[in-house]
Image (cartoon, rainbow, N blue to C red; front, side, top):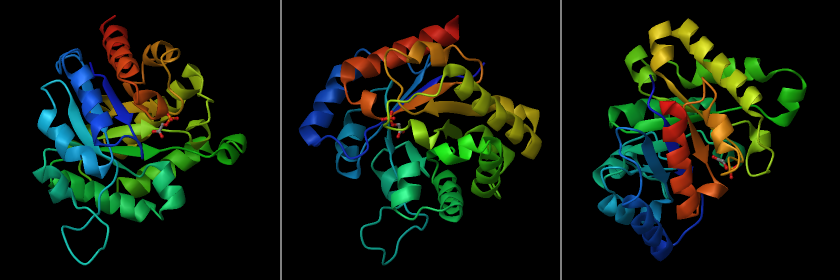
Length: 255
Ligand code: PGA
């Protein structure tokens, strides 16, 4: 049985006071870490203050990192810098970074290797565009991303990875993939990982769905057998809603 994992992706939202207010209101009420992994992926300037206040039941994640340890890379942040301030997770290859900040499968792969080296848990985002889905290319796109992004990773690393299936057409658009469509894609990802590694690795791998997840659709998504959690953007900004996501995930996976 895979433990559910709910991650909020705050993107470029929340100044320090807003971030602190959020963590104070959720940390007492979030379910135990034994039942669900709860992660807040915030922007760089609030990571330290969140990490200092994270309780046992909430973990902090970054939304990006560089794949090198240090150097003349103005504006970049390394995995060891994140690790040093108490960050545990890092989103890698989000479609917004792929589309707007030149992230490629090659840099995604280098970042995954570096994150594991620094003992950060990566949340790898993959997913197809609307055009690719309409041309029936979804599975092919997912296979290609998996092959390139996971190149050189060991089975043990992949078993500890989190993959977020995020169809690009569903992000921030209000168009959620139906739970069946989302489950089919997550099932395909698991099948492909089983082929690339082993059924055991695929069975341990946790796969989230992401893209317009809201309080009114989380229950149905979490009831699907191949969906182990959610990566939530806009709807993760409200503490009350974030708590709802956590509680629904625990309930759905304990039934
Ligand atoms: P959304 O974003 O929930 O606002 O659609 C999801 C994401 O980008 O991870």
